[in-house]
Image (cartoon, rainbow, N blue to C red; front, side, top):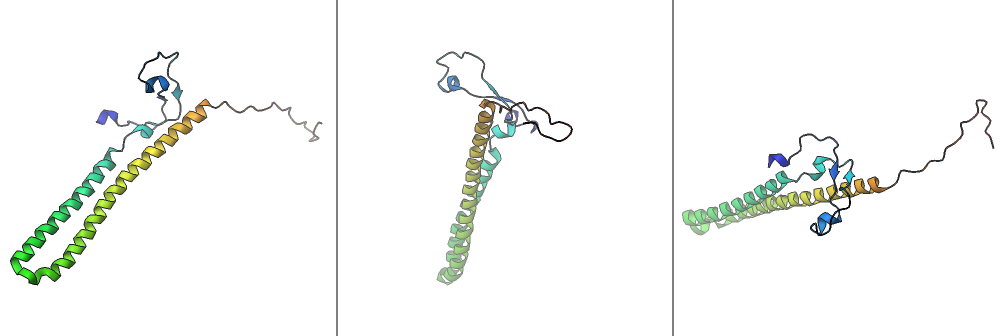
Length: 151
């Protein structure tokens, strides 16, 4: 896994996958794949940490719900129906906290998706700027030293 991580966050060039690569090498490529400048390695790095964080938060939400079930069983066995008012307050608190943890896990997955969208936008912008021709500027004669412009 560590061999896929970046060593430096400097600007490197990355080869773009052309249409030949997408159709499974059915046709032969005429030339080498074009090199796209300004695509950093961090643009291509997966968001492994956020996925683990999402799973961790969801697991903590499930553990809280299991603790809620264990607390209800223990309260009813120990005190009977007298524990119901106390258990309702505790149950509502644990359910809300478990829901918040589950929601934070979903937000982490959303951040992964946003990161993929930003990465795709960066790559597409680099491809567009690489494929566009440089702007043509007209050669202009230098201004005279006396400040009077020529017609």
